[in-house]
Length: 283
Image 1 (cartoon, rainbow, N blue to C red):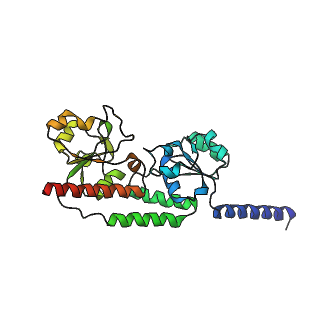
Image 2: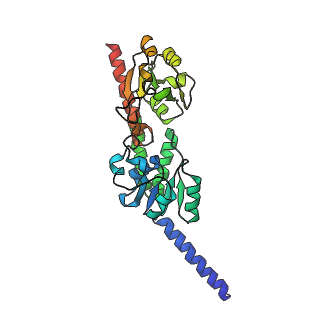
Image 3: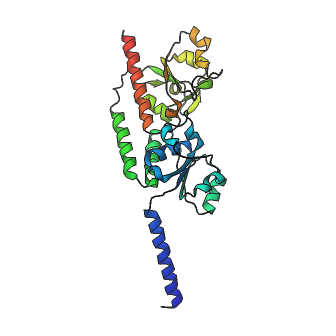
């Protein structure tokens, strides 16, 4: 065999060996560029694997795992924020700047993009993907198993479902093709948005609210003890004159912005509120 051929074979063998070795070693300096991937990273990775998370994970309104998040330095998704951490894995989302991702790839930095989890199926898939990326697939499976078991333990759903509206500033709402909308279904409510023909995201105007006359509304304020005209919509005089005085269910925004095991907690709270409403109506 010619010497050059032998040399090329040796180089190929070394390259493949390094590649295989890299694939079997869990990443040790992970940077996350999205608040929701932050939450999964905090949930599934070893603490020492996490190099940086986004600045939003240090905000109470956005970060369900705030206590854990405060232990790590933050970034704003810019290349100049990321590179000093010398990451061996960067986890991005659909919202991450393509220019930033292209630059990272040009510098031979591994980048993985996770889809936005906006329903139950994509939530479970995303947790599995994150667990694989950080090298702990068994943790992801354990989280998923627990979530599914908790869902099975939700109270039975009655035929007479009360109507509930997710009613955020300016009447913003979600239909059943969303994570919160699915939690509403799982908890045994009728979703006002769905009755109004909204499948994913939209707005409920005052006329529709009066027509549907919801028994409860869901509010998830990003910051507590704040006020704006948009946030005051549920107290509009037109609703009161129509005799609408719904039960108000407060859900922390950190439980509804990103998906995770806390999404099951949302369904549990909504199911409990439905039972309380039924008990109150019976008396």
